Length: 302
Length: 180
Image (cartoon, rainbow over all chains, first blue to last red):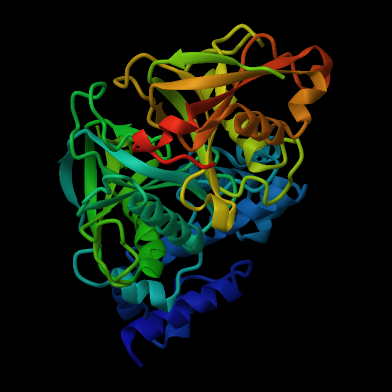
C-alpha cells in the first residue's frame, strides 16, 4: 500500500471516530504504521501534525453542532473529547479567533450555518494527491500592481455556476462591436464577510488593456459589463496545476492549511485566478493558473 | 402615460451586481429573490462602507439597472446592478463594483402607486412603437429617491424609469445595438 493510501486510511479512521477517545497511536494503527513513521509520513503529506489534524477536525465539526442545535456548549465539548468547557473554548478561539458562544450568536444572526475560516473539512486521498504535486504548496510573494478587471459578476454556488458565467462572458464579449483580445483571464472570487453557506461572489473577466486615465476612454466600459478596480496588493502567488474541479483543493489548502501555519493573514476576503487562456479558461480542463491571495503580515508574527 | 425626454451625460455607478435569472426562486416584489438580496447587499455595503443611507430617504438616488445582454432572449439571464452615482473611479471599496452607462437620451416615465408593481415594461414598449423610438442601448434603470417611501407605502411612492431611446430612423447610425 502506498504511503498516500495509508494516510488516507488514517483520515477515514478519524472521520469515523471523531467523537471517540482516539489519539495519534490509533491513527497510526489504522494506517498500519509505527507511531514514529506515521507521524513523519502524515506531516509530509497532510502538512498538519496528526494531533493538530484531529483537533482541527473535531473543532470544525463542532461548528455545525453549535449552529444547528441548542445543546449546551459543555456537552459539545465533552462529545468531541475536549474534557472541559474551558479546554474546548480555548482551542476553538485559537482556531477560529472567536469563542464557541460568539460563533453560535453569529450563526443565529446570519440565520444559518456560518463556516468560519479556517474551517477544515475532512481531507481525502484525492486532495492529498493534488496538493502534493510540485509548486502548489510553495507560494511566491508578489506585488500585484493595480488593475481594472472588466466582466460579469454573480453569486456562485459551485464550479457549474462559474462555468456558466464564463460562458456568458464569452458570448457577451463576442457580441461587442470590438471584442476584447484578452489573453489573460481574471477570475475574482470574494467572500461575504459572514461566509454564509457554500457560495461566493465571482467576477469572470479580463484586465482593462488601458488602465488609465480611468475616466476618459473605455472601449470596454460596455453597459453590459461591470468594472472592478483592484488596488496594488501584496499577494502570495500559488500555482494551480490540474483541472478546474481541483481548484477547490488548492483553495482549501491555502485557507485551512497554509494560512494557519504562515506568518501572513488574508488582507482582503478575496482571491484572484489568473491564467493565459483568454476568455476561455474552461476550454482546457487542465489549464494552469495562478491564484493570487492578498496577504498582510499577521499580528502574531510582528 | 407620457414620458419626458432628457439627455444625460455618461453615468458612473458604484454598487453591487447579479448576473443570471434573478427570478429563478421568486418572481414577486419580494426580498426572496436575487433582486431583493441585491438590495440587501447594497444597503449593507452602503451602511458599512459608504456610511450613507442611515436615514431612510435622505441619501442620494439609488439606481437599479437591468442589462439585457447576449443571454437575455435565449436563457432569460440578465444583469441587475444596484448602485449610486459617483464622480470618479479612483475610490472604489474592495467589495464593490462600477457600472458605466454611456451618455444617452432617455425617455423618463414616472410611475406612481400600484403602477410601480404593474407590467410597465409592456406599456413602455407600446409607447416606443407608437412614437417611433427604439432602445438605444440594451438596458434601462429605475431611479429610487426620496419620493419612494417603501413597498409598504406604495400608494404614496413614486419612481422614475429611464429608457435609453433613439428615433428608429437614426438607429442604423448607432454602433451599439438595441434590444427592440
